[in-house]
Image (cartoon, rainbow, N blue to C red):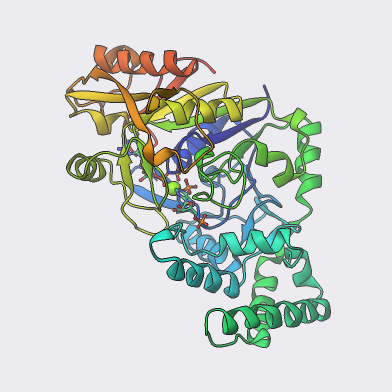
Length: 427
Ligand code: GDP
Ligand code: IMO
Ligand code: MG
């Protein structure tokens, strides 16, 4: 079990950043394989808060290497901002952070197109983070993307940008009535980034494969969540990559045979930010109470997150897709005050009850969640450090989830701080 992948089992924001930071201790290299600066991974250590968008959450461990794989879409301005923030805390990424030369670059036109297409969709908007993610991945697939390595061939880059920006300007002007962008301005801006990120850029395929062959331990850090996966999530209300373990191989260039273990992270309830079906969404009053207690505001956009009960139908689907070996349950403390806790065990549509997640999103709004109710524990769990100290009813809740998911829960998180975590079983 030398390499592992950690994925979100819900709609993102499960607390992956915090858990990566904890697990990183046992690994040599932490690798982001998909997504971009739409991610917001929070790590809190003794009151110091870090929010990572592109830099892997293992960077706070000075002896670990971190990699941004080819499957990530890289916004160099965002990356440099994050590195500057780390520097303020005397954390250097030099010789420890490696960026794939094959990663695609996010350009200003991606962000502009993302925001414009969203604002024109009105009520049908996806609710994206506005970070240019969808348009950048669309360009990658349409063979119109520009990769990090192209920054180091100035004449070639000029030609590519001229051609791509001419096409984008047609769309911006004809479809959105927007002002054209200047390719020269973008070129100058990105040449500036090229120099500044050069020390980090390399062939990460070689780096990761050499590490795997020499028995270094690699931890792959998923961003977003499986229910936002472009293939397995609530399409089209998803992100444009594969946050599930399926993205690791294409997003890093490592063979699936080197992924030995999968950790799934899930909240004790559910949140979702952005639009799209959400069968277990709580009513307004309870949703607001849980949002306040759980500080459920987006780490990237600050948007309020929608809150709902634990959805075992969705999580079971995510466990299957990822072949999760074990789970980590986060934010248990947020349910401390609930007298009764609901867990959705099926979706009812007319006479049919779904136990597996239906792909048909036209159907989901018509589905009623089937809930099992469990008594709450009504005890403050945030200071608990040993598994035997957990209230009996909290343990019963954990056991219920394990049973319904057919999955072992190895760790429970009871607060945002690094130390607020309880090991309850071995991997
Ligand atoms: P990620 O995107 O999966 O890394 O999650 P985010 O960082 O976007 O959101 C998780 C939020 O919950 C952050 O504000 C964390 O500091 C916080 N958090 C993580 N674990 C816990 C926990 O067990 N209890 C509480 N109350 N907060 C937590
Ligand atoms: P982390 O890694 C939660 C959501 C957006 C929107 C949809 C598409 O912090 O868990 P995008 O900008 O990716 O095109 O938006 O995906 N989304 C996330 N939701 N956590 C995230 O990342 C997310 N990244 C994207 O809100 O619904
Ligand atoms: Mg987040």
